[in-house]
Amino acid sequence: MYDKIFFVNLKYIFMYLPDGPKTSPLLQNIQFLLRPLETLDAWSEDYGSVFRLRGNELPALIYFSSPEAIQKIFTSSPEDLSSIQNSDFVKLLLGENSIIFLGNERHQHQRRMLLPPFHSERMRLYSQVICEITEEVISQLTPGKFFVVHSVMKEISLRVILNVVFGLQTGKYYNKLRQMLNSLFELFDNPLSSIFMLLFSRVQKDWGIWSPQANLMHQIEQLDQVVYTLIAERAIQNNSPYKDILSMLMEAQDEFGKSMTDIELRDCLLTLIFAGYETTASAISWALYWSHYLPEVQRSLLYELNCFASTKDKSEISRLPYLSAVCSETLRLYPIALNAFTRVVQKPMEIGGYQLEPQTIVNVSIYLAHQRKEVYPEPKRFNPERFLERQFSPYEYLPFGGGNHRCVGAALAQLEIKLVLATMLSHLKLRLITTSPIKPIRRGILMVPPSNFEMVVTGVR
Ligand code: HEM
Image (cartoon, rainbow, N blue to C red):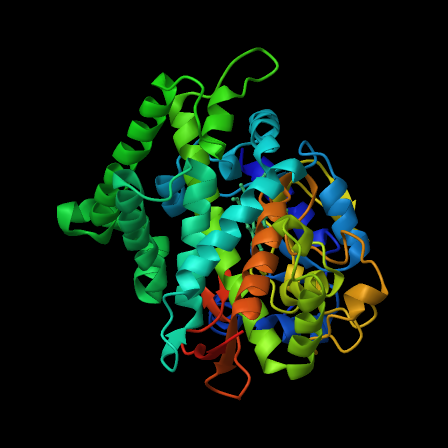
């Protein structure tokens, strides 16, 4: 037994691994937590597109950002390189059947069941919903009064996701779910409480009913009651009038004719809500920011939108080239997720010129891939035209990750960003409160706009 450990460690010591920062792992973590973008920029400046973190700690943790290495990672089979997420906190919330915790077979199985609700023909149905919700929410903004952009975008995004996932727009369950989800999301809004939960979830188990974890458990139980009631009610409805994801998943059967169990459904639905809510809200906030921070971007957008003002089919708007370019550039410059899900090497394999042993942790840095000067000249500049001038490969442009874990909600998220931006610009004249640049802040694993990002309605169009 000890011999085995000795030889495994020896193998690591003599393994030729990429260089990386020499600071202590603790300091690396702190730097990355407090100033993620600056820290990643500094590490890539010093060590290039591959670097190793955590000194000699095992297993090695390696960051990749070159298109060649990313291609290798995204095209490897799950038997060679698998995604392993092991956050107790997230598991508590989303459940063990959440797609993000499933391995090989079960993961592929759930993905097959999940993809149809996100097919392109479904997007036309969602388009109308997104535009109506946006119009309703922005009609409540008071002219002349400041509003926190991210809060308004979260309101739109939550209403869209509840509609798309559960078919809910009003009523008892809608109100209950909104209130419960808002209170759960508040845990993430408070950086201290979310860090506390992430770091101390095990310790808190001993603190009884007063611990933040007990409070979380209580909130999840209440949420579960509503979700299971919705599932039960839907099960006895014949010819459900709803065209939502819940109905589609309840009707779906796998290749053996088996449907999802209620627990699987619950975990799946909550995963979609949590994965799709703040990510999309943040992206829309950034798109709104850039289109008002740079007057020339707004001019080009308005010109394009005016040309298509008469179109009845809202999903047509989402195909407008300049609008699409603005949304792509928004997700390039400040990707909402800095990294794809962590992958772990299962069998010895070569990536980016390095021979990696099993258990090596592999991180694809979406942020650094989007900052490569040879792919994106002047990478710190917001320049939508670059997406009109050339096409980028899925290994150069990857805001939704890639390979067999690529975001299942990517099409919905892109549609929503474009339609909310287009609707807001077409209805309202807005102004930024501050003219100095704003930078993303960290919330959990996401990079989101700060709460001091405010705008004011100055008129209508
Ligand atoms: C701007 C918005 C969004 C961004 C930037 C984003 C980004 C990502 C990223 C980077 C991943 C990991 C992919 C990988 O490791 O290769 C992911 C996974 C996932 N996303 Fe999204 N996402 C967004 C919106 C959504 C929406 C709207 C939904 C659903 C309604 C969704 C559902 C999921 C799910 C279920 C996964 C796990 C897929 C799997 O493990 O197979 N996301 N997303």
